[in-house]
Amino acid sequence: MQLDTPPGPTTGQRETVVFRTIPIPVSAFDWLKDFQRATQARTGQRLTFNEAFALMVHQHKQHQQNADNGSHRHEQAPRTRTAAILR
Image (cartoon, rainbow, N blue to C red; front, side):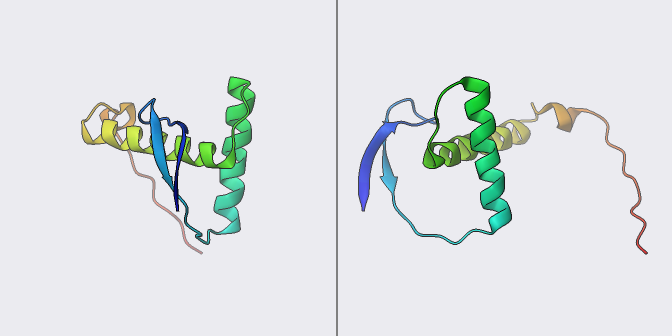
């Protein structure tokens, strides 16, 4: 089933939505709810769970594109590795 939805974070225009039932771990659900609440607190605007998920995916996509283009700040800083101690 597909419906039109309000403007999305990626296009600024109406996008078609797709309904899927997918299982996700409780830890991922909790993280997404925390993201939703933090975004609402930061922006002062109410955000549905679906909007929060779409925003998270959009931000991840932007992050990946920046990293792929070499413009991500973390990629340009020198990296050091610390050894893990396993007991």
